[in-house]
Length: 222
Image 1 (cartoon, rainbow, N blue to C red):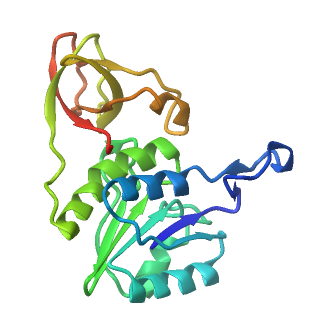
Image 2 (image 1 turned 60 degrees about the horizontal axis):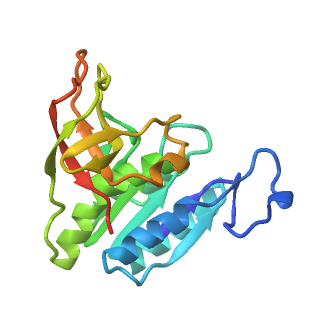
């Protein structure tokens, strides 16, 4: 089951002239469904939830009873309209993590109840793409007995600034084994992902990653 959230999120086919200034189309739902399909997971129930506690509780409870894996997108941070953490607590799931020291994707949530696995992803689309590859892809491989994602080694073709407190996962283009980090405008910048080949792992640290430095690379799900 895939639970997407947000009152501001409208169906993907919504015409532009029907979008209010604060509204956006649902890109995360189709993105996650496509990634799951590429990994061989076709039986996906996708439900979009308003930012209200009661429908969130009902949908989460039903998902636990009918699913092997529950993925949520958005509503997993600590804002007043982020209802999923409190919902999972009410339902008595066993929390594993809530928040990881990475960029993008810091508010990731993971839990389980009996045989059902729960993974909550952030709401910004680049964070969704990154956290799916880092946290959901390995789970899918385990559940379906596929080989785990294979990290490679590539060489940076230009300097990159490391984050002082979080590991960064930046989208890159490859030419042979040389990786070019794609410029971005933050975790809402879905457009910059279009030309990417995968994620480069820039380790935490005050020093930058220099030209010629070897870093780990994870290709995008195909």
